[in-house]
Image 1 (cartoon, rainbow, N blue to C red):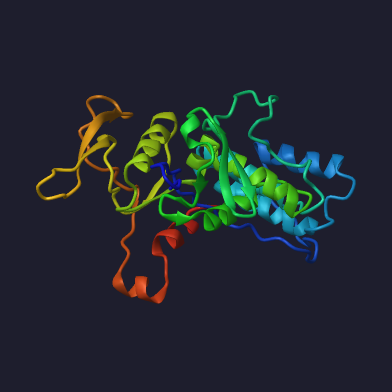
Image 2: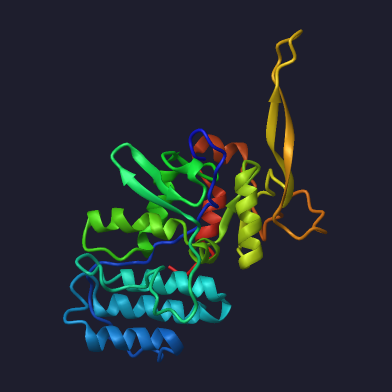
Amino acid sequence: MLCAAPFLLAALVLTACGGGSGAPATTAAEPLSGDIAVLVEHVVTVHPDPWHEISEGGFRAAAAELDAAWPELDANERLVELMRLLVLLGPRDGHSGIFPLDDAHEQELTLYPLRLYAFPEGLFVVSAEDEALVGLELVAVAGRPVDEVLALVEPLVPRDNEQSLAARAPQWLVTAEVLTGLGVLTSRTTFSAAANLLAELERDAEPLLVGEPTGGSPNLYGDPVDVLPPETGLAAHVAGEYWELAPPDDERLAFEPDVPVELSAGDYFAGRDPVFTAALGRAPR
């Protein structure tokens, strides 16, 4: 949520690709296809030292795994996994990657209308279409600490070093196609503005929902107006606006997950996150 204002971004689901140096591949691999083949060939042909961080065998293995999963991925998932593949080239390689604001894209990507900046105190909104958000700190994303979410976004962000990573990661965090391509973790705490954003994601793409049914409805009553009855002094709240971001005839009371996962008492007290584990198991590594 944003401090002092009800604002949440959808939770993200990412998986890490294997990296690091290792022995080159010694066996012939199946030829790559489509965009993956184009990117790998471009890396090999253009980059002066593509294996300065990852071995050629490691990079080609990651490309082959993505190639095998490719037919099952939608457009946004393909975007995310191509981003991840190029970031495997490592540090000092902040010019190699796929960038949300690149005007060379044939189809423009969608950024939510706010800009975040990482200060020593935290991640704050420094500009936004809704000026009321400026100066607020983003402390959680659909109930997850923002540091945890940023750690999941980072494998998609090209960088030279930690400073360029800090400068760029917030942009990936507010890119709609990245959010939908990674999937959305849902739970009973996906409520209010988080449900609103999920309705927008559902309208613009087909996000994979993993977890519990949401605590918020696709169309919902919100923006409560407060009243303090004088006799009891008990604050009451009454919704003052109807938020209709899903189709008008959408009668669902919750977003139902595509991959239902329950959090058991045993998982909770053991510090395990079965929802996140289930999401990790669905994406190429």
